[in-house]
Image (cartoon, helix red, strand yellow):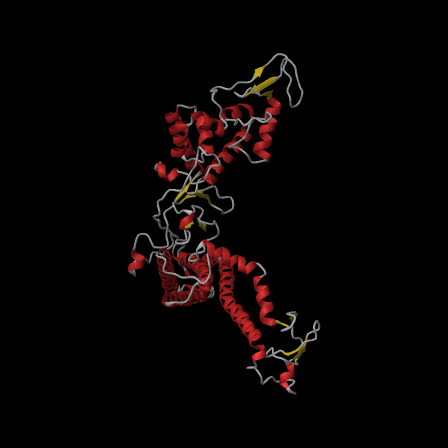
Amino acid sequence: MESDEDFMSVGSSNDDFLDTQDSDDDSLEDFGDDFDGGFSKDKDIIATSRKPYEVDLKVLSPGDIEREQNIQVTEVSSILGLPPESSAILLRYGRWNREKLIESYMDHPEQTLDAAGLGNHFETNPVTQKVPGFMCEICCEDGPDLETYAMRCGHRFCVDCYRHYLGQKIREEGEAARIECPGESCHLIVDSKSLELLVTRDLRDRYHALLMRTYVDDKENLRWCPAPNCEYAIDCPVKQRDLRRVVPTVQCFCKHFFCFGCTLNDHQPAPCLLVKMWLQKCEDDSETANWISANTKECPRCHSTIEKNGGCNHMTCRKCKHEFCWMCMGLWSEHGTSWYNCNRYEEKSGSEARTEQARSRASLERYLHYYNRYANHEQSAKLDKDLYLKTEKKMTSLQSQSGLSWIEVQFLETASQALQQCRQTLKWTYAFAYYLARNNLTEIFEDNQKDLEMAVESLSEMFEKPVPELSKLKVDILDKTAYCTKRRVILLSDTAENLKNGEWTFNVEW
C-alpha cells in the first residue's frame, strides 16, 4: 500500500468545496531504462544505483489498481461513516484527493454530498418493486407485474427502461463514474449497488473497467501504458511542473519504453516541450516557407514573390515592371551592360534584400543539418527493428552452423536491443541540439554524441555480417555492445544532470 501522499490527486475540481492543489514537493525522483548490458562498473557515472536520467516508478496491474481503489474507499467510508458505494462516488467527485475531500465533508457535509450527486439519504440494499397503478414515464408501459426501480430521489422507471438507459451510458458513451438518474433535471449519481442490481454481467464488467480507467486518468501520478493491448499502468511521482528539468522515461512490464510526461515513445534527452515544438516544426508548413525564402526572392518594389527560371540575372517584375538584379537585388539601371555577371554585389540599393535572403538560407541550412541526421537515425532504427525481427532466425542459423548453444547465441539479441535503443537516443539528440544555444557544454555534448554515433555504426556494421562470420565476431560484438551502452549512459547522464541543474540554455522560448 502506498502512502497517503502518493494517492493525492492534483486535478482541480470545479466546485468550491473541493479546491484541490498540487503538493509543494519540488523534489525530483529519477529513473530510466533498465538495459545496461551488465557493463555498469567501468566509470563512476555508471556505477551509481540510479542514473541521473532515471526516475522512480511502479508498474500496476489491473488487480493492483482495483485493490488500491478499494483500500481508499474503505478508509474514507470508515472515517465519514458512509456506505462504501457512496464513499466511492465522493472520491471520484474529489478526484481521489482524500484529504481535501474529508476536510470539505467535515466543514460542509450537506453541500459536499449535494455537489457530489449523493443527497442526504442513503440506501444500503436497493430492490425492485411492483407498484400498483404505476406507468413508466419513458415507455408508457403499465401493468400489475411491471418491475420498477427508483433511487432515493424517488424517480421511478420500469426496469427495462432503466437497464436500457444504463446500457447506453456504459456501452455507447463510455460513462461510468458520473451516471446520473434518468429523471429530468435530477443529478443524483447511480451507485454501484443499484447498477449491479439492474444490468447484466457483461455490462457490469464493462462498468468496472471504465471505473478503473477513470481512476488512472484522474491521478497525476498514474498513466496507462500506451502500448497496444497493454493493461498496465505506471505510477511515477514526476509532476507536470518538473518536465522542464527531467525527461521521465519509464518501462512497462510489456517492455515498452515511453515518456511519462507526454506518453510518446522514449525521447531522451529532449524534454517534452522541445519534442512538441520539434515535431510541430517538422510537420507544419514552416519549412515550406523557409524553402520559399531560400529559393525565391521578393520584388524590392511591390514585394511579389519571384522564382528565377532562367539564366539571366536581369529580372523584371511582371506585376509592377520593376527591373532589378537577381544577384544583388539592386537597380538594374546601375549595372550598365553587365547582363549575365553581376559585379555590383556591394551595391547599397540591394543590401537589405540580400541580408534577408542570407538569413533565410542560414536558418534553412541549420534546420536541415539537424533534421537530416534526425531522420537518418529514425530510418536506421526502423531498419534495425526489421533486422531484429529476423534476429531469432539468424540466431537459429548460427546455432546450427557453429555448434553454439541457444544461450550462447543470445549475444545477437542483446546487440539488436542495444542498437535500437542507441538509435532512438541519437535521433532525439539532434532535435535537442537544434534548440541548444552554443557554449562550452554543447561541445561536450557533441563529443559524447559523436562517440556514441561512431560506436553504433560500428556495431551495426558487425551485426549485418553473414551468419558464418558472426561466431568469429562474438567477442567483438559483445565488446562493442558494452561500449555502445556505456557511451549512451554517459551521454544521457551528462545531459540529464545539466538539465536538472538548469545549466542548458536554449535559443527558443519554451
